[in-house]
Amino acid sequence: MNGQTAIVTGGTRGIGRAVAEAFGADGATVIVGARDAEEVEETVDALEDAGVTAAGLRTDVRDEYDVERLTETASRTGEAAGIDIVVPAAGVYHGEAGATPTDDESYSAFDDHWRTNGRGVYATIREALPHLNDGARVLVPTGSVARDGTEGYGSYAISKATAEAVARAFAADTEYVVGCLDPGIVATALSGGNGRDPESVAPMFVWAATEAEPAVVDGEIVGLREWKQATR
Image: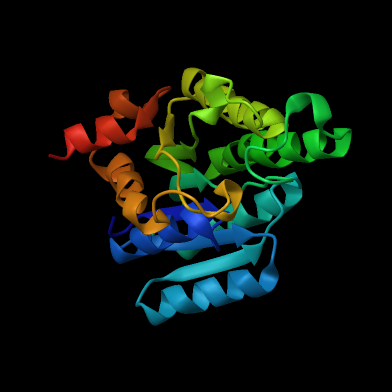
């Protein structure tokens, strides 16, 4: 990824943090966005201490103007102008994972899940578009909860289904490679700390950003099995 510039929203924790570190270790310039300014600063400092060219901004993906500033910063930060990789990993879950049934959720939880996990993905891709270089790729983290109708995940699952639909629409309507990556259950705050270590699935994102054939990713949902089969 030498010479490439990557944006990772939600890049201070969980999958986002692990992906930011993996991209940086592979040579990318990494720009991190997240809601907590102190966590953004700490993450950027850690990346720079590891020899990565990095920058970050306090970014709330519910606010397209925040996202606009993040993408403009990213386009000016790398060795060359523009952005090569976008990972909209910012996400929220209101409540205990698996214990938020659709028929017992507040409207405020529904609205914030949708604004952050669904509309936030839309805003991140939309604001990145003017800065994307030829061959740029957008990799949207997802999970089976978006498709399987799993009991107890309510509007969180609905918001993740929205994110998948957003990715498919941008794949259909733009020249860029836009797809979803499903790394299975990953141990983050959103999963209640259960699942695989985020660091173990970050290489999947590096592969999708660099080695995967465009047709494998564009408009698709790529899971662990496809990744492992492709990298045997």
